[in-house]
Structure formats: C-alpha cells, structure tokens
Amino acid sequence: MSAPVNSAPTPRRFLPTGPLRGTIRVPGDKSISHRSIMLGALAIGETRVSGLLEGEDVLATAAAMRAMGASVLRQAQDDRGNAEWIIHGVGVGALLQPEAPLDMGNSGTSTRLLMGLVASHAIETQFFGDASLSKRPMGRVIEPLSQMGAAFEASEGGRLPLTVRGANPAVPIEYRLPVASAQVKSAILLAGLNTPGITTVIEPVPTRDHSERMLRGFGAELEVETDSAGVRTIRVRGEAELHPQTIAVPGDPSSAAFFLVAALIVPGSELTIENVGLNPTRAGIVEVLRQMGGSIEEVNPREVGGEPVADLVVRHSALKGIEVDPAIAPSMIDEFPALFVAAALAEGTTVTTGLEELRVKESDRISAMAAALTTAGARVEETENGLTIHGSGGEPLRGSANSRVKTHLDHRIAMSMAVAGLASQDGVLVDDTRPIATSFPVFESLLDGLGGQ
Ligand code: S3P
Image 1 (cartoon, helix red, strand yellow):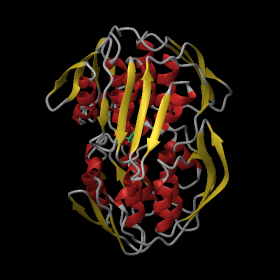
Image 2: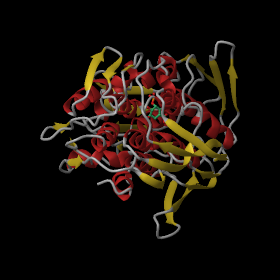
Image 3: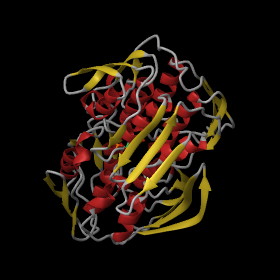
C-alpha cells in the first residue's frame, strides 16, 4: 500500500489542451467505498458492492478488514473493468486480532475509522502509513476513543505509527466534536456499534453523513436530531446487529470536481459527467463554482445507494472571483485545491478563509497550493487560514516550463495542478503523479481520452 514511497517518483508535464468534449464517468465515491467494506465486514452474510472505488486507499481498508477476519473479494463483471465486490462479514464484536501491523498507506479515512472499530474490540494492533499519513494528527480520534476505554501508544504528537488496545466492553460516551470532522464522528459511531448502550456524537457543524445513512441501511439503530441552530445529535445503539446489503456506490463528487474545473477553464469545452453523487454534505463545490459564474447543469436527478445523484453538464464559462463563505467549507473540504485553480483563471480576486483544516490533510494544502500555483504563474497570497487568489481573467497561466510543482504525496495537489496545466502556455510539470492512484487511478487515462494530451 505504501508504494508511493517505495518506487521512484513519476513526473509528468500536463500540456495545454483544446476543448474537452464528451461524456465520462468518474470512479465510485471514496468515503462510501470505505464504509461499504467496513460495514459489510461487520454484517453476517453476503454484502455485494458495485461501483466500488478501486484506489489504493480503499484497498488498504479491504486488506485491513481481511486481516481482521472478513472475506473481501473482487469479482470481475465484464472486460471493461467493472467488478462487483463480495464481502462476507464476521459480525459486530467478532473482528479478529490481525497477525501483522495494519498498513494504511496514505489513507487518513482508513486509519481513523478503523481505529474506531478496533477501539471497542478485544484487539491490540499497530497502524502505520506513508510519510504523508505519518505527519497527520490522530489525537482527534485518540481522545474520544480513550474516553470509551481504548488505550493508545502513539508516536510523538499523537501520530502514526501507533498501537491501539481495544476495550471490551467499551463504555458509551457523549462527545461534542471540537473540529468539523466526519472521520472523527464516524470513528466514534463505529466504536459505538460494539459498545453496550447509546453512544452520542454532537456535531455543531454538519459534515458528510455517509456513515449515518449507511449504518441505517445496514439496520443499525441510529437517530439523528437537528436543533434550530443546525446542531446535529447522532445516537447509535450498541451492541448492534448489522444485516448484509447490496450497495451501488455513486460517482465521487471529489473526483468529478477536477473535470468540472477543467471544462470550466478550457475554452470551448462541454463535458457530461455521469452519475455524480450530490449529497448536500458534499456538493459545496458545485454551488461555489456556480456563484463564480460556472455553467453546471444537473440532469436526470435520481437516487443511487441511498444517495442523491445526477449527471452534470459543464460548459466553459467566464469565471469571476468571489469571497467564499467559510460556512460552506465542510461540504467541499477536499475540493479547495481544484477551486483554487478555477480562481486562478477567474476575473478578479477570490478570497477563502476558515480553512485551517486544509493544513492537516494529505499535505498542508494551503501552502502546497500557494507554492504550486505561484510556480505555475498565478498570483496568490497565503494567509493563516486560506488563500487570496488574483485571477488571470481567463488568460492561460504562464505554466512551469522547467520547475516542477511539488505535490508532497498529495493526490489532490497532483490532479489540481494537472488541470492547471490544461489552461497554461507552457504546461505544468508535476513532480510526482503516483499519489493519484490513492483516489482516482484512471484520472490520467480519462483526461488523455478526452483528447487533450
Ligand atoms: C472523509 C472526511 C474528510 C475528508 C476525507 C474523507 C471521510 O475528512 O477530507 O477525504 O470519508 O469521512 P475530515 O472528516 O477529517 O474532514
């Protein structure tokens, strides 16, 4: 799983392109894919998952669930790469002690959610990951899971590698999230599944609710109450019994975002992106790009796997700079790198604030994007909690003739700067494209297939 640190960096220059036209599908949603494997592994019987994202992060989750006793198998469906994943779960409370430390690769979601699962099982295990993941804070999950009775030995600063000793039985807690984090919320809810009694998470700022939707779908007793101020209280009853499901994973809006921005900034483009998940806790990017003047149409709205989905038709647009409301950040937290590229091509100034969480993602995305866009010729100012970007007014960026932009083992920096290259004079030289495989292994082939490169 830690391939990116073990093999040689793979640089690539992303060249200016002609219009992007056609119809594409992006792979399955990463968040939903992780959760469908985890919950399938806890349900006794056969769970079938189609549209699963087969990126390195999700494969790390699959390997970990296998190591804890579940059977997780890929069954090819056709020769176009479509597959169904068949999971035979062990039952809540019956996860096994893994024989070796769990390799989380680059995946924060795998790490934090699985720490939650292990925390209420009679399991002692070590988690480790790549250089990027080993810098990320785990204290945010260690704290509530310790209150539930689990014990942790972490590296300095509450980081990986770390050892978890689960509590059995764990004790239910009521926990108010100090940071807007779906990963922390989900870690506690997953721990709550094997904890006798009611585990409560209070969420002052709503974050993605895939865990809640899917837990209900698998038959957990889960209640959500929203007060007049929008504060959500989520209660799950343990010890839960989960029932196997058949799940269709919708396309990942976070992956679609790169193609939305690409079509908006490359003159003459018109793209249809089919089957994009538009859960309101994830769809902030579409709203913000529209506020900037982007033409994005939703066609054929429907439900897939308990999630709202539509096809998106996006056309090249003259974008204008805006002040992005920080309240929308949680619903597009992974899309800021792509948004910054759109802002770099807009007319006028875009101001973003309230984004301190971006500093603890796969890289410090505020400083990484400030440096990358500056290298590519954009005018950017970094502040403590955001970027201010003075757009080119639709003129191509200069590009980075000989200097490589640094991606810091961060897939979203690599893909965002690839998109910037499409609307540049000299192209953009990305120092390493390997991290793209963590979330969007077919990104480059989809892009190349649109004829631009
Ligand atoms: C995720 C939640 C988000 C997001 C990550 C996936 C999830 O992280 O950045 O890519 O699947 O729950 P936080 O909850 O830490 O903001």
